Image (tube, rainbow, N blue to C red; front, side, top):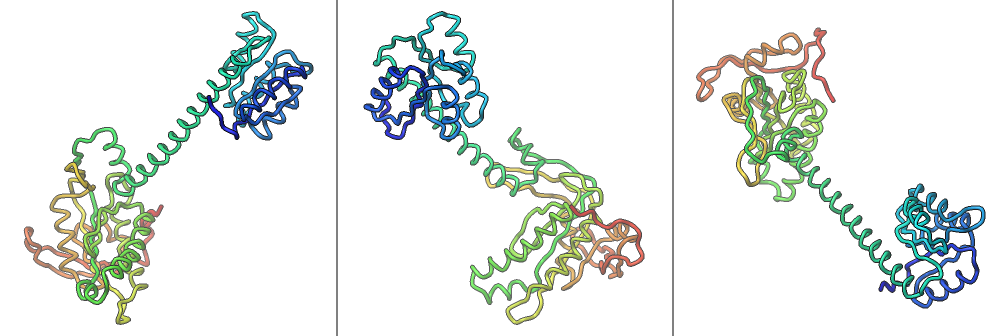
Length: 363
């Protein structure tokens, strides 16, 4: 038997003797009892302060028990409250109608007190279990949403959806992808002048600024390695202007980094390298996996960054050819790229002042 002082029962009956008997009996069992002599008052009371259970007579003036139950079940505030009919009507059709309008039990008058108590306790116990299950489902849904947010923060949305359906390795070739690598100039020396916690907080501020720019231009951040920052345009979700968006991101990163200063007061500088071409992208392994890129295009973009100069954006000829109508460049010349030999490269210096083409669709 449930014996909880806060358990509330609404008793609806137009016969005073029945109300008095039920109130006396259930109050002795430590239930909080509210007697109501008619259906209208019962509905108002239930909506104002929903009870845990309703004992409901059928034959009442103005509003009978069937209609009271029907209205309770139609109201979101009261539809989950269990309703037990307590009536002198003993025909099968009366009981069927009671269940059709939403009742969960039917007790015939004259009733046995022990039976009424037993059925009340049973349905209150079931209601309590149902409530506990609902709360567990709510917590489970919150945890699921938290996991979903975490997964989306680690992996691109399209890839996280694939992984949920199939945990096999994911690898896909893309013929056109534009890759940016950025690196903080003099990071090793700067790191030696800070405590580890200061260094992490400093990097977090910088990379968070870059993250917001990446979202603005609808690109995909791949990873950070130390002070290196890697972004790709054109995958895994197609982008209408990936090369233009990456170039615009690089110029925006150069502007934003000037808002950060070193401990000696000098402005921070970036080296940035950009290349475009085919790559393989995907997720491999079973532990601590990330979405990553492989291929010659990745290596060339990385070398263009590492062999660049402070506060400059070095791009390959393939990037320059795709952007020459909308951006300004200056020829750097040929530089040796390990594994590829000499490559002609350019400095990206800004957006052309005479262009009429749309530059970088921002989201």
